[in-house]
Image (cartoon, rainbow, N blue to C red; front, side, top):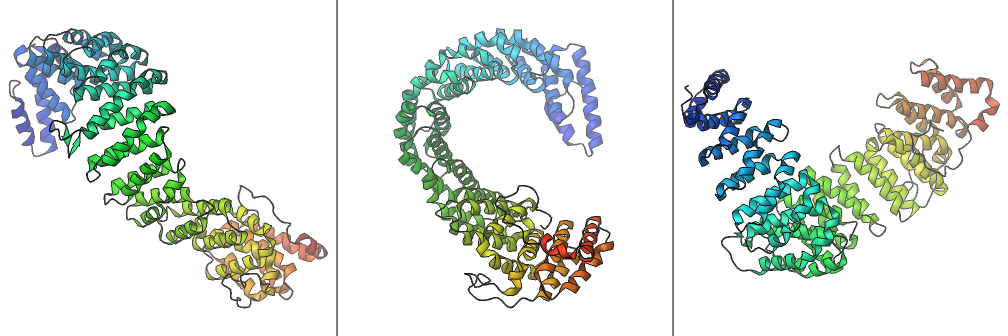
Length: 606
């Protein structure tokens, strides 16, 4: 295809290609034509060839050979050439390439041009590819343009100033004086970019907050006019006047009011007006309300205003749009530490979110539910979360189990309730309780001497029904080894033995050994669980009175086991029987109460 062909002819030819190879061949051929035309320095077709180069670049093919031609077009006196040159500069160059510095002089001249559209092209390119060096070279020209009376130029200059502040923070002082004029403009576009510039300066230099806090009354007045103004077709979006400017002003007020009571006090009224007068039936209104809520929570606002903000988030939770519900949960999670009582009013709605189909909503609702637990609602909240645990996704269960244990320990209303909760959790999700928590659970039960009989009976019953849960098996086996005599002697407690108010069925020594034999032989049991079990069987030789021969036989069987740890234990235990039987009672006596909780993995069965 000759280099004089139009861009639309190239597009048509590329679209007509039937295979990727045909397209590559066509592109390579066209690039060769374009490079030849560039070498011949054909000024009449340069702009057209650059346009084709840009289209080739958009398709993902290399087009770096067009960079210098873009700079030549930028230096041209024709507006059409400049427009194509600046477009190519923005697409083919960036601040990481040294070539982009060659355009600085042409850009500097264009920033002083009499035609506003040429100035606008230069500002657009500057905002797109500005580097540290370019920012320092052209910062003065941008500052002069900020003082222009032409809103078209001022808007673009303000955005370029934002870019300079980000790239070269030490130059921000140059742009502080013009901000007063920008914030007094009536043109919404200038106001929007001016607020954006002030926000960027405040973020880059906290010391400037004191200077800009004097503009708070002015910002409040602008926001009030936007909220109270009638229909304005030029700025109306779904019945709301210029929501983009409202959001930007709210973000700036948030920065200026944070940590300053005087500024925050002057914002309270307008924030209340925005929160109560904004239509929440459209997404535009939700955006403004969200920004208002975040602002209220971050400044030194009144308690009543904070309650209003939390109530807005509560309404978000009842919205049919999942994205809005997610935003509400995420924001409440950040808010709960500041105003827990206000968030508590929406506890039922938050718990309902645990039944959502969307996994991200369930995750946020779960995190927020744990954050809401306190000493007054721990019973009901733990019950709800335990119900959710039954149907929860597998990836949630370890998180739920770990946090339930922590919350139950922190806010437990009674020892009995705490023990029941921990035992129920082991029975429901034993595989999802981390093994490093086993020692803590064992220590907790050990401390509660009056509940030993109840715990060992409940755990034995659970183990007999399910030996597949590792943590449940380890805790149960340890308890049986320590308190096996209470298990077979039928020691009662306040809950009737099994926590239901009714006595459990009688447990015999043989039935206990049967369960332990199933555990140690089960392929589902881990090595640690087998080690616990073998030690427990040995302990029962001093707690059971009629099964000593069976216990010896069970231990002897593992004297030649392939597992070296089990084999070593079995040999040592057999040695105690044969050579040191008189010491057996002293060696295997019950362990003293564990008064502290260990952080590592559980012990080796005592």
